[in-house]
Length: 322
Image (cartoon, rainbow, N blue to C red):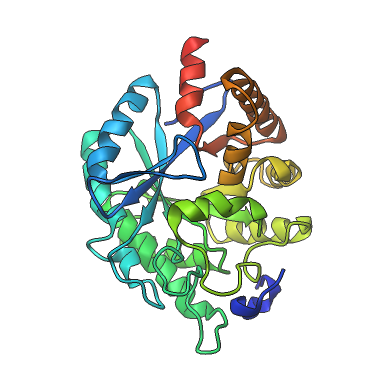
């Protein structure tokens, strides 16, 4: 069994899609429990938190332009947060409420859902903690599988666990099989997710920073190519349908390593919020477009089959102009 840092106490821790040159893009969307919300994210220009009543109109034009897939994250402000993330799979959860309406409004849109506890736990960590503040592995995997199953039942085509708990892919697969959903819902594993400093703007978006400590005890250390290879191998062995490397540009060597290791598994790369913020501030609109397309080309060169990006609307407009 692979363990990242032996699950030491996180409170004491330190350190069908858009085709473009055979590449695919997935748009990140955040859903708020306020169904009429459209809240700007101050750290990420042109990025918003949407309630479902605002999300559907926002997607309509993008779908017309060719958007085929979105990755959905849920945000709660009034639903309770507790140590086990009860609101993650509650009936009033914004993702669970949004999925049936998205399926009805966009029957051809591929719906992927991020699966994690951190937006819903009172401590802000991605798993369940013991009374000593250490990740409690077995109940963490159980809760992640329960949340993934709830999203699958609500209408997700893909569930994407981002927590980095050991063996959660097997837990999710077992839950899907037990409920007869194994041939209807795929599992996208955040298999190579690093403890990066480039997630700051996204945590502002999700309001999900840990209350104490950090996540370095269960995310991969930035210098650990060997651990990344072992993590990907473990997830493949447990039945992951797709793999992911996160963040994107600083980890292109891991993209190539993972694609070479598992050439028959579609490989996703996540262009994270820090990358988005840097490119957005890199110059005028023409310079932003040029840098963006160069970056995407490099991701493809490294072996990525699908790029998850906040830039999907801009990319669609660039493709349309071309």
